[in-house]
Image 1: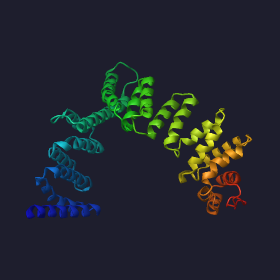
Image 2: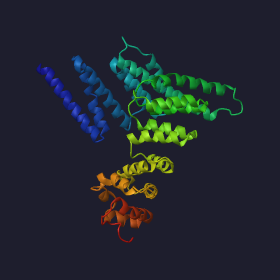
Image 3: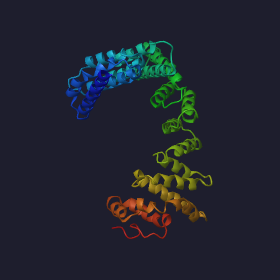
Length: 377
């Protein structure tokens, strides 16, 4: 028992030395200690075997990725050894090995790695294993898409029936099979969605592309994803969709990310709308944007807010509308936007912004004596 405890204590000390060396970017020192650490794999305790194997794999690859004398060959050898150190990590290591090959421009080798992993099976397939195989198939399809892009750029434009076009279409079909499958599973699949939609658009299948994007953005089984709504909006805009549908998509995006840059377009649409109440909605959208410091000095947002306020002033109840929106903001908005410091800064660096904010001060923060109430310095 004491011998086992001493062994684990030594291993833990070795790990601490490795960690310290890595934190200080002393990669040779880390590699020297790492030569001893894999002894932990000899631990017969099955409960700790897999976690230790993963630690060894991740530390080894991290050191190799940073070591100045590391070679592709040494990296490949390490990946191959770790794949066969335990079946539970095989697919995950294959996927990371593929990423490493791609980063080093070895496309064909990466695709070969995924092909081998795709056909690999061990015992009864678990749910986790099935998900990883799905992921590997999806990345293999993504590589087919990349090859498709390369061939599209180099194809002959004069003869649509030559071998280049047939080859191009073959890669499209190969990529589509698994991309369709992965998109049926709830998750965040942004690069796969964009790839599939680009190919569908290229072949003129706009209906299927729209179905894919609608499902990705609106399917309740999928996690909330602002990008899904952005992709749908961009697609609809490319195809000259009526503003009514664009507004609907931006409304959904607003719920998820009120500070998104597309909220400015949403505000313009609402301002131009003839529907009663849309100017009031635009006011709320713009004020929510300005609740975030990243928009504090954006002239376009303030100008749009100025235009919305001017439009609202045509209504008899405009003061009530503005006061309702600003009621919860009076304690902190002036400090965020209208201090003497902001006034001096805007006066010097952005006089146009200073002028717009000055015109809105008494409307948004009535009764306040703030830095924008005097003349521009």
